[in-house]
Length: 321
Image (tube, rainbow, N blue to C red; front, top):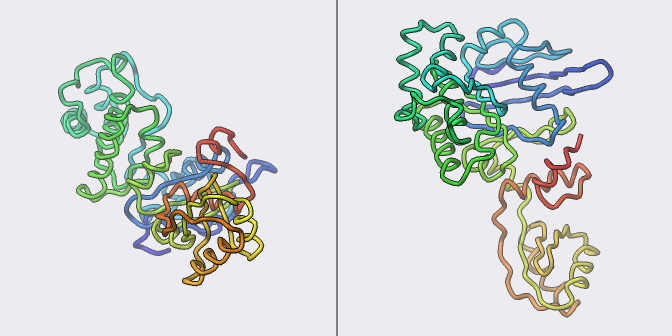
């Protein structure tokens, strides 16, 4: 195993009877911020439980922070802060003692845990609200409290499951900024599971995309986006003829009304587009290199896996398994 990797697995598999939840995953996740993506049923939850040593892999091997997932689960979990998607807070407990209690569960001395709880709540913007009952908090304040619970023992890795889900714009901005600060100034790593592509792209440098227990993609977001460069063309008139001409020439076209995105296969792509427009009688109103987003990358990968979807929201809503 490579020492400078945050997470590394080789042929990692997990089966529940005949159902294969993870199928021979070979992962190399560097330190820093990584987005964990995939539709419902992709294997994300099983993957997290396996690398944390909460369940045993059927076959294969893996390390997290240099610890073996089969034999050193307790050591791994002691160095990880987990922020769950589900509601894990006691509504009748005030925030300071909720966070303190999380520290004590991790084995911290009560006095140290209380001191760290004050610091953690101040860090996530709840210093002045620390004596309020959690049940009186807004969704954003509850999410911040969960993050404080995850940070109390100063972990090397934070696993954040849908950290900005359900937040209004100001709470979402604060949550993402706090995660960015934790990564860049705090020199901590984050594994962020989210269906909000904009948030993942803002916080993370890398992604791991799972699909039906298989590894669909991994690597730096910028490197993966560069694989599928496109030219965006805005046209007027004879759009269908133009699209058909491009497709018959072997060019990949993604169309939304009068806007088409054509795979960039080199400088000759521009000449091919102009020639197709001339043959079909189409006016090109605008043509430029398309700045791909993580959403675009996600859609391209899922299209290659056989799904015709308009956006990631459609995919997650359908819960493809």
